[in-house]
Image (cartoon, rainbow, N blue to C red; front, top):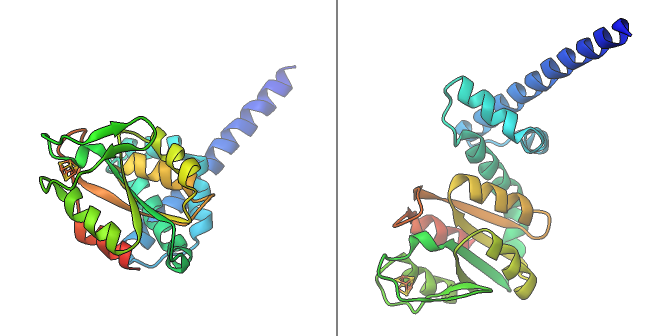
Length: 209
Ligand code: SF4
């Protein structure tokens, strides 16, 4: 009996060491790809970071590495691996942005299925994005939370999507959507739940792809 406990202990320690080495290799490759803008072994990096997302974040916090790094790497890699498929789609595309980018005095009505219906009043960036969406053939949605994303996908069955959100939410949505359609993501410049902002030019550039 004692022998089997010892055996289990040894297996556990070796497994932990193996997983830690795997995470460190994936993180190292991810950081290199991120900094050099040259994506290498994307499937391996995404597989490991998806599989061990929470332990990777924990390792980053232990070494005082900025907490958004894991999400940034994963978003960058997903953008790079899905961009060619995204470019091929010419119709039925959607743009999904967060409600926190609206002006604090926004009067848009919130539909329980598809989120806020922007009237293009001109008080925030969504007025310009609405026009650009019409120009580049995207349906625009402003959502109060991630749960709306799948409702919109089920209702409109788009062929491609651009999403804007904070690091964690964007990474999670891109992970879910990447199994269904090609997606492109843009992170918020200013995080939070109120009066946030994104790089509008970067979003429009993605619409033009
Ligand atoms: S442009 Fe649209 S989202 Fe922005 S404040 Fe006006 S109605 Fe609201």
